[in-house]
Image (cartoon, rainbow, N blue to C red; front, side, top):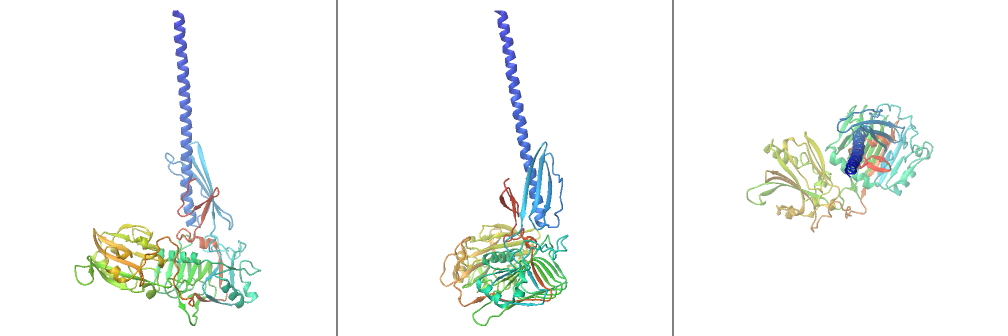
Length: 547
């Protein structure tokens, strides 16, 4: 009995030891699996980090496309990644990222596809165009050319085997018939995506061009006058400029421009001047009588590589917006709720041919801002967007500390120092989305401004400056609301918009380049590129994805 009990105790002890051993073994395997899983997650994070960094770099700086290897980050926390960037002719840009952590790795393969929305060297969206070609060496070619300003692309003109596009995209069939009637067969061969055949397409693209124009006004540098650029450099291949001129522009000498140039007036390019990107010439004139053609001329060896856009913007037909400025008051006539209207401009957009308010330097309003700026110099104030449901477009704010482009439809509050502010510009893209009212209801409603979109500035809790914008009508109505489809203005059916005279002479040329246009993708949503990963289409600026 004693021996049996002893054997039983020994057997139980051995069994318990085996169970404990198996439990510890299972725990060890579970721990190993957990470590392996965690390492896989960290390797994936390393790969995603590498993709975000390298993908953002190569889409912004086109010259930096040489293979990049073993770019290390903190091994202890995020592992490391190896990035290889390649480019195949005019095909997509490819990027391979291998993220590593301990003994595991994770790979991301992606391709960046070129822009397709502005795939032509010449766009015409207007009512009429007169085309004059002088010389046997004139070319309007839709073959996808390299961007000549980029490193190693000096021979862009002889590498014309890229995918053909339309030589010219036209707004409607009437323009097509007009072009075919004006040009000879020999001339039509020079407006082509292929060297031996004419390729003139018919497309509708007003919405794209309106969006592009609105974005240029929102984020670009706006000049209220024209200018002559003589042998100057504007922007860079990896750092495109966005410039808007209200006046005639001349590019002469060896001027090189990169980015987006918007011209409200005549354009003349001569000598060896070259623009890489998009040149948009806008005609907002309206006439029901004799048509005045807006002159666009390239001569000598002037070249546009990218796209020339001739756009007859209809602007805010059938209506206009007014602008008010309000300042504090104590009492007296016109003083409502402690604020008095210091400035009112009827038909502000028509008077100055703009679709925005340059609060700091705009005509009519600049003198009020300068006085305010001197009064509150160095002080930190609060800026608020008010009645944003009756907004439209965007507002651009900038100072030495940074810049931001905010939707006019979004609630937004920030701090500013008036004398450090360099840009404060609301841009409106659809009149129907603004509050439709008249000056008196806005003036007499200091609390709500009768729903008018308003930029308010406070010193603590005290309102010290306000700028309001609203559609001026006799019978008030609510705005259509942000994000709604554009309204249908009551415009004169006989009115003409966008009438151009395009002249190409000597050795001038227009060459399509998806690369030159695509450089604008990170700055303008209307021109964007796409990363494709495993069939998914992801925005490249900023790069945000779940892989």
